[in-house]
Length: 316
Image 1 (tube, rainbow, N blue to C red):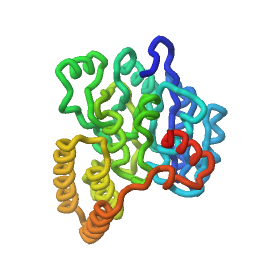
Image 2 (image 1 turned 90 degrees about the vertical axis):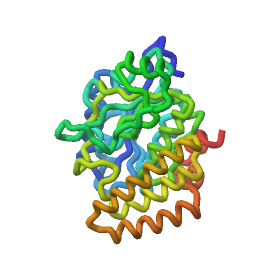
Image 3 (image 1 turned 30 degrees about the vertical axis):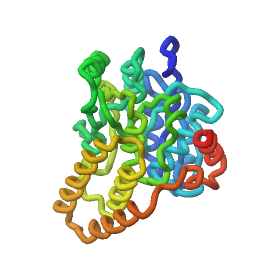
Image 4 (image 1 turned 45 degrees about the vertical axis):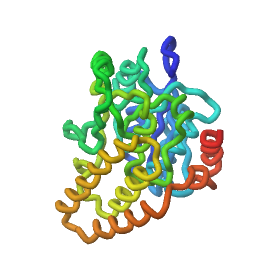
């Protein structure tokens, strides 16, 4: 656990891909925090719109790494977290996408919620541009929390959770070194669910409503909104998680697996393009059962300093 006797050090990790204007909003908001992160690591996932060059204009506290290929959100976070820990020892990593705009008190409220407690992860309240709750990033309440744990979370202004989102997730750096990085081969979808439940298995996390970020997605939607071609990743990654990940207990895999099936059926029924979802389901089911994600040292090989940093975390 971080040392609470001093001001904790925080490195923010932002993954960017072809959203230059939104990235500018995110970085400006990070630098304007009431309690600002010590450093910001930006992973530019081979953008073609000048996102990396723009990020470099935000000053010396922003470190920018432009990847030679798009590694998806999962690979971007794995790369950024590895670089954030390379050669230094921060207390916390603060993770977010390039369409996440934290309000000025966001980091201060997260740190206040975890101060003096044994929480290893904390998540913000995520709203959309109109101020409404963003259903895409709702945390999962921890059904196994004891009465005392629920009471302590309330005392810290939050809710005990079993998972949280990469749209503003504060995670203890020592735990990252212990459990490893997000799985890069997930590319998109379920990477934060797998990772946060892995971090929080046997450990404690808190959702902090006083910490607010705006998730500037194009539309307001939940995880069962028609995903089109991306449904492949939802199915494949969920099956990978249920089959290979140690983030959930056997009972949890049964419960969350059944929940996923119900959500897939609901998505299919609501879709205007069922043929695309059928194709995604078939390919995702095939690859989810017949393959498994590669180690990060393989999937992120050939990326220079990123590959070296990933090896330093995962080949300890």
